[in-house]
Length: 135
Image (cartoon, rainbow, N blue to C red; front, top):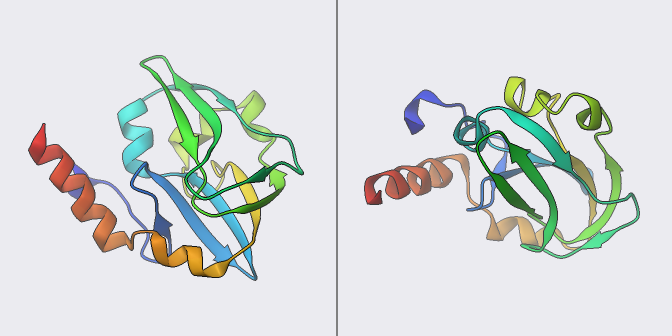
């Protein structure tokens, strides 16, 4: 299954399936193609307010599908400076385009060294494969 999904090389990943794209100390966050495929039809995304401060691996929101609800975890610490308001009305963007239009939040990162705690695309792929083998 994992080899059929996309995991862009330029992103970093949480083991909990959130991705992080860093540019000029701003980290854009969403969920991976693997996560959206597991969830299937996303029907609701609960995101924090702009100005909320989060810590790495701390819960920042919830995503719900017709199948289940899952907590979302921040890949880095910092202040949330923008949320994807489109997801309030069109949460299916997470399924349709998880790495672009389906992004969730933007964080002004406190410590760029936290990126080192995240998985590369290759390591994330290995993580997914090992989870699937364990099922």
